[in-house]
Image (tube, rainbow, N blue to C red; front, side, top):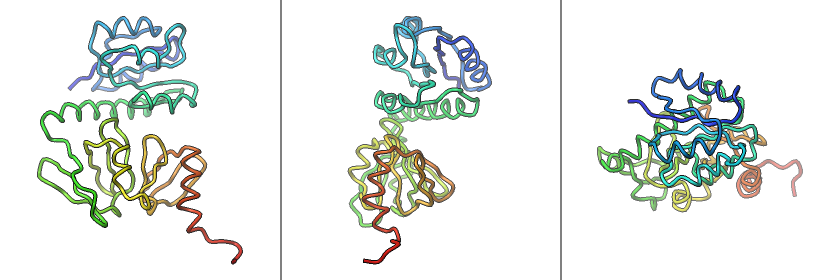
Length: 249
């Protein structure tokens, strides 16, 4: 299946580089390349597009303003030189955020993420997406999928990633997509085990291997980003309580 995409960037060199990379992805079909937000808005108001790869800093109409103006919103992948836009972009439900230079590998990852989300939205109407149905047990919860209702132990969950209206639950050897937002999952899962470390991620603290200033390394070689405020909260409420002290009181 082919997915239509649009590129918008006011920098010719970067625009051409993104186009060159996306042409290598066989599942994508580039339907337009725009030089600014106004041109992109005009095209998107007349044409259906699956994915938009957009710069943020553009004259007259920024990438974020472009997204806000659209009545029918495609999946947006923001590409920018400024990492501080990340939080705002995810508040707008952008599917991904890339800091320039945008490499082929990073664009491929973003494209696959957008495609997966589009496919999941299409599956909802067919009732084939898994749905969490119970989280009140002591050490496990249930979720619904096509084969029936399955059980997953809390300990088996490594981390959970937001996909807008959906969430993706990662275990050591599998992943499950549930029709529950990360915000609602956070309310249902036990807070002494699961901690929000980023707008898009919840982790199981029992699987932490290393904590750095910007990342959490987990079992099975998983790594997720962590925000400064969430890092401080994680330290205060979870890690420091179990950290060996230099001096005994």
